[in-house]
Image (cartoon, rainbow, N blue to C red; front, top):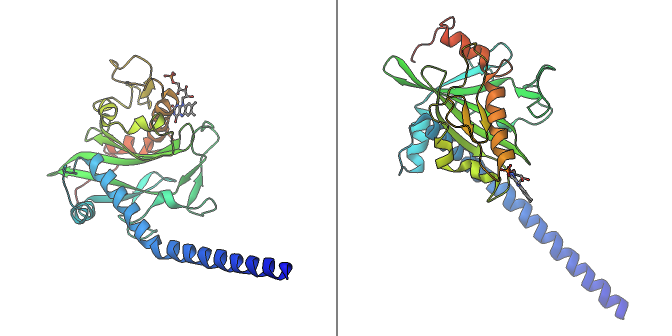
Length: 262
Ligand SMILES: Cc1cc2nc3c(=O)[nH]c(=O)nc-3n(C[C@H](O)[C@H](O)[C@H](O)COP(=O)(O)O)c2cc1C
């Protein structure tokens, strides 16, 4: 009798557990499109903030509409040129950060890359151009790389000279709340503005270091979060270097690659 009771209790418990997990799975499936839409909105906001096109109060609808108005170009990282027609669909909706590990759309970076930088790069990367009339005002470049605990995703905006920082916007990371997440502090991010990213020889030279923010090539690190803040400097140097956007920017600066408003 007692065994029969225990058996029935276990059966009921198993049925309840099964029912609950089915409901959770259904909720996850059901909410995925909503989550994706919010992720897309968050990215749109970060791009617009880096582009200098995000007013303080703006509705979600306005964010999307302003984002869709941006001039988006797809860069082929293997040849470091803009591709005319995107082989991966609408450049404005393409999320190169969402590629899975085995994706054929990832490129192996050559052996010169250091171990703390990505060994795989997305083949196609969307970049954002902001025009003032016929003049390029800003170029917004997505960058990512290893922080202390996580991959840091950010948008670096260069001024039209393609040599100085217009804005730095951290989009996503998994660094420690209260410590590493201080890289999101708008006050610290504002210290990046105006810094030079290339030296006179064209080398990618921006560093995040302790106590040397007077230099045009230096951003002061965050005390107590030096690992994460220095990492952001490493990420920028990598992406502006020969494995990243370096050759593209050089061609654009030297006008060997024509750049016209849409
Ligand atoms: C639990 C824990 C989490 C930490 N998380 C971070 C982090 O996310 N980013 C970071 O830069 N430092 C983090 N630190 C601190 C680093 O270990 C290191 O002490 C700090 O970056 C050094 O900064 P400083 O050179 O300015 O003293 C963490 C430390 C502990 C104990």
